[in-house]
Image 1: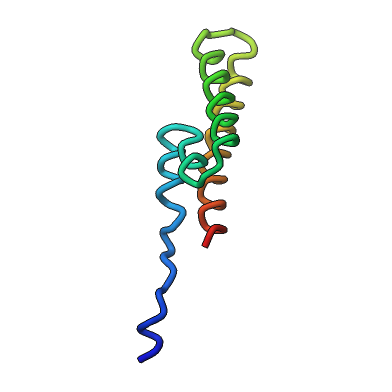
Image 2: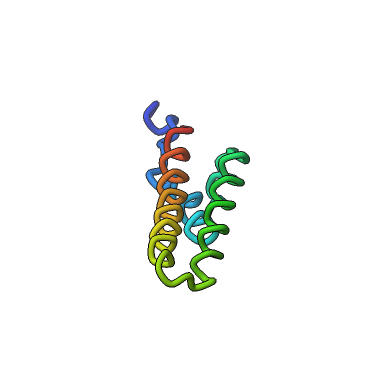
Length: 86
């Protein structure tokens, strides 16, 4: 009976911040209470996205990869940090 009184941790705890960062890089960090990191991630994603969209011929691919890496970092970090907050 006492095992029913213990609240079980959800395995989906980090999914909401990760999904938010997938839509807007840095939103998951903001949900996790990491405002400075959220601003930094959003700024880097915005800068690399804008540089990629300008269509720089030779370095456009490198900037595009940097943008995808920043986006991937935002999603992964939001998920991991939310799971650590248990």
